[in-house]
Image 1: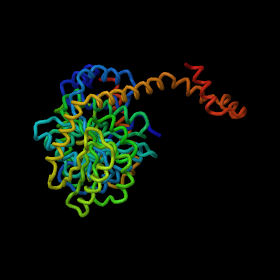
Image 2: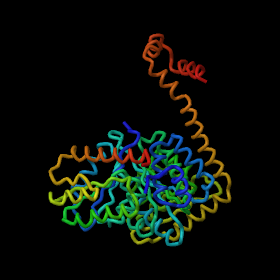
Image 3: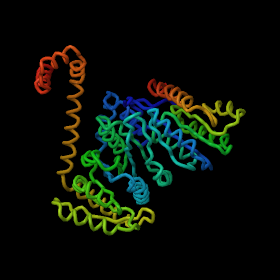
Image 4: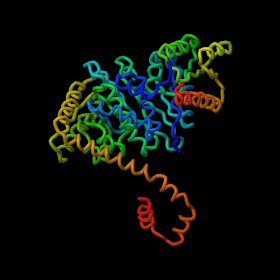
Length: 315
Length: 142
């Protein structure tokens, strides 16, 4: 068998073929700006928009990967096709990464044939958001009913997940104490379903009550985010958890606002990226010219004036 | 710092072998060498290893065993890859492998087969070379 060609990748993705899906994601991950990558996305795009995209975020070590293992197993048992994309951090020093999310879900992956792909965030700039967004499109076009996206951990990346996922799950647990206080501000606003994991541990009910109180005090729209307690070792609480995910999925379907917002955000991202692409070479040419830079320093030109002048020149 | 296309490598100890100190040391060394490393954990079946390699679209699968089952288990991995028509993923081996078995593994397409005491730099060099071959294969489509 020959190595896959573009047409085969596109056809394979639409047929749900794993090798084609895998290779398609690699093309996007490695050359997301290339014409090949764009062609794949352009051709599969009409077949997207069917899957329910669920984002999972929360502090490191809270049990996100284990939870995804359980969720994907249960959803598969109900007859849904589930795909998982997990993002892990790249080392800012070597650029390498250890993609370890898989270990905690391996059992459900093999048993139920769940497709799972690990992506390194590769320094978080540019590539991250684009390759995750497009990986999700490929999985959507390949016939997934649910696509579960795991983020690096609580932090900046969470803002992206709101725009990528229809339903954002925030996972928290007992014993976070002050940490919950610290992350509350950002994270309480992005969750559609809050889950307290490790309900068997001491302090779990206090954590649940704490989250409920905070939510009650924050202004919310039509959707009131529920708080669900689960135990990932026994599976306790998962039925309710899945119901809430599905309820939110239906809510989103009936409220075009979030669909508009999602598309608008992605379009905005793409336009900015396209603009950057167009002017990238001009900008690096300008920045690479030592004589120009030295002159700017000598003449004490402030960065704003210098930038305004350059932009005027190249547009 | 971020090389455009880091090598993606899957580390696995297929079969009944719980001695993972060596493979964990390698996992970290490969990460520090700028690779994207996936470790599937202990006791995966050869089927799981091959499925994971395909789903993650890795460049290299690195197998390790210490218990002497390499001629059975490594071969199973190589056979499954062949069966599935996967030619664009390199397979390398390591562990306690007698010299007599090395040519046999090579014949199956499993290269390297390094034993204890091998300098990590040598292993990284070999993997980088195999990955480069594979990347070339993927690019030309032949």
